[in-house]
Image (tube, rainbow over all chains, first blue to last red; front, top):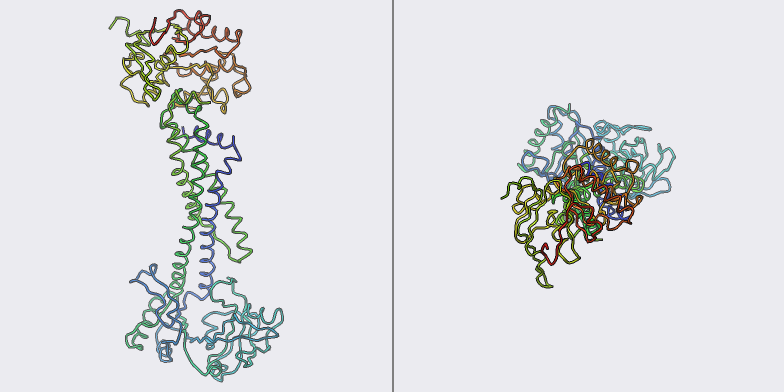
Length: 409
Length: 227
């Protein structure tokens, strides 16, 4: 009977193509919207996770403030509040020294951020991050150079005004010119560029960009700003296997330094990715819920058209019942028809969402990722919509009495 | 009741049908007793408003009597629910209508198969049987056509084929040639006579005595009673 009902459903849909298409339109748009939002969410997660992975799996980031609140050991239900890391830092020189002494720690590098416009060539950049750090930063981050090199520990100790420039910052300030030996002004102080970084693989404009950045020696920044703050410490652990161990050791050491207060965070790459993922999942769920409203509208459309269709086919129902169709036979027939309409709509919605994804990629430079899970969700939703909104018309059809139905035109 | 009850396809006892609506009360049938034996060809005659359509609907299990009993093949139909009536109708009764009542979106073969579909018979068996019956009625080269490509006579022949497909105990024909010209009408009636000769029980409702003459016996309905 199922195959028979499918055939009947297709024949019915094809016999009124324009009407069927208009019926499906709500579902098509709804599924496309839901899928596209899910795919964009996945795409953003993928790209930012890629950026974070570039940090290296044996790298720990220590920040001021409790940025990640995990309930117990379950990092998935963590809440991420980056703002707790802003402002005057709780990290100290002593913390830096204590961490260096821990076993399994290879390298340690403090980071200070400097706010300033940057002038270079004949351009000014207001978006470029200025990262002041020590020479080991380049090794810990495994920076790759297109030209030149990172500054040395001597450069740092002597506070020399040298800088390493990221690929995007270079493009914004110098275009295609070679930036090596060029001069840039940070707070009107000249710095000479001694290195140009390669573009990092995940070239996007999401999150803090490592490509739109200038790296200067920490001491030069201290001289420039007349302050010294350690906002972050990045740590290279001897091996990725020891990372959790190292993390707890750093945590207890710093807690001791801070008088028992955990006013800092030690984050593994996994922590960063899961924190970001959980925010993004919440955001995505919210957006998808809104997109789902259009699915409901689509369902209402199906219900309306099917009610009309049932009225028009009263005679057909009468004939079928006369030759032996029961209530459930007729119910099944019309329910399957509603489901086929929504499934076909779901399929076209999938195609539409792929087209939408291509447009988004061109315009916003995010590559949407279509996971199997998302596609299954979207299709299940359309089947459910078909059932819910097809039930009322199907019951109306199944209830018709043969004698009256046969009299219909 | 009588020794012949086992042989009765239709056994109607004191059938009454009463309609109650805003227009008032209508006693369509006021006590009908009627029996039809296996192999009978009965014509039920009467003017419009006589109650013959109501009687036919009850015989065809499309309606229930208000009072009285209807035994179809010995089965007491008053005890059956709507779904059971549908199934009984499917298995035991073949219908032929004045207005043909074939589904316009299906071709002839699919129309004829339809009662078998609701019986759950496999695709292969259905096609085989439907094709065979259509062939016996001279329609084998029309099986893929839809009704809009056929003449009235051909459509009615297809409807006859459909009525036979589940090997019913009874064929119920409501003015079978009402929409046909006299020549085609004669062809169709001759087919019914031929079917009856091979043992098929037929009950036909008509207002025309010429058509009623093809049957082996007839009864008249007037004012809700058999006269």
